[in-house]
Length: 608
Image (cartoon, rainbow, N blue to C red; front, side, top):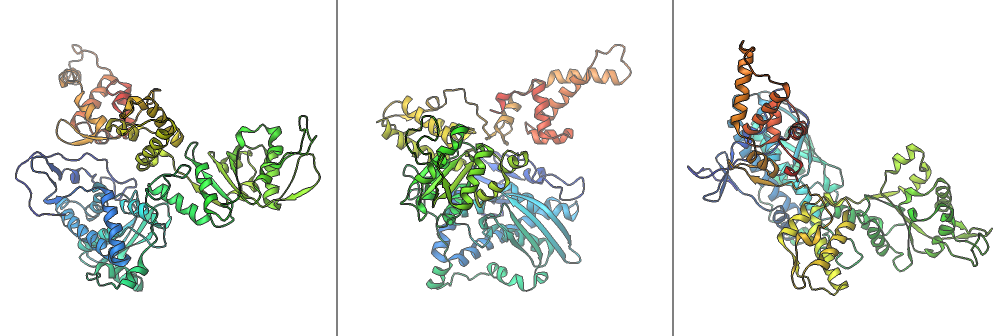
């Protein structure tokens, strides 16, 4: 939303965000994002946000995702894409006009990169340059950028399956509108890779429209108005398959639970491979729920009515691996008083899940490889070969490629297992799944322990979202069970009911500092607790006497004392913005934090 007036008065607060680029966009001396942040203000007395002279609007990403979902469902894929593309296009035009005003005295490249920097500042995602060459006078333009953390993809994947078409419609519209306004001639950006297509990041390429040739026609039509006239039949054909909502999906016990983009990506891959006979390898840290995914894979497969047998390879002594996997005849070893079926025979017709497969010995790996290749097993102490029809699903929390290089895992077995790998992301990267998991486990443990806990306090929710969950979902499950036991019946679970074992938090929050600026909460605390300037002024007076020939009467000044003063002054000058303070001193932010901590200016508790 934009408005061309700016209030004459009001309490304003500018943002304090770090610069966007990881790769230098232009020559050294390229301006950082501070000049753009300085034009962003919050008018606290009348509820308006301004970027330069344009009124802005903060909205929830999930509400934008819900609107996008409804537009696709109501108007069809093409109409929704056209509306959102043109919305982004208009935003790009407005920002290009601002770029010329903000950096009117700098180079054209420094002026142009306002676009990708605004991409970050406005919360759309992170933009990194791959290649940027243009000449306004000659009309030539080539731009290539990689996007990470794109908000459109996150919301698209929340509702829809991974597909064959890119989904960053507003963002490509923005890039096209910005470049067209900046160049003074039509420029089209097209998305050639996209998270919504299963790629690891999004990549866009932009050229003058005529340089695209026939490739431009399909994308250009989405920049044209009048796309609402879509017949019902055409709309139906344009719809894409919708994922189950959280209420309809995996709330029942034993099913995966989540709504995050990474969760939905893993579930989409699982649904694709489930009807096949392919061997699946689940990758992920301990506690992310690999066995739950494996059981879901089994249920969705054609073997769903057959046995699912799970085996944790790390729990079996090496001398018993063969009998556990393949069975043993009576008398095969001491204590074998009767014949015993192995896991492969028990899983015949169904699925065998081998958890922590990377812990198997080389000998056991060789025997497992033979079964995968031949489809037959031989019991310990027997000479008869038995055919088995088993789908093997494996899981590991170690890097099997690295284990192959170390000689700890057979390369041929790795390739047999790695037919269809599925990565399950750690919980610290799936914060959107935490509230749903909290509700899920609360209901489970209320039933198990006959409790009537109503929910969670806001303090408990904040703590759950701020914790890094090194034990992943397994740890979260245990914490919720602890809370259900400790909380008062008919009441709500509070933070002290959940975290009773000295867990450490790493909150990454933003707050208003004393100047009304939005900064990281730890930096706001640092600024408020900064030592008085008076002592530092005395230090500079001592340095001044030393430098102006009065060394015989001057108090000694150590390099460490001088550096401490510089560090404190840089933090004060930037009002607690550590990234900006580090840039003033020509060091990185981590180096800045290290120096502040080593001198007692900043403590670990300031970041927790």
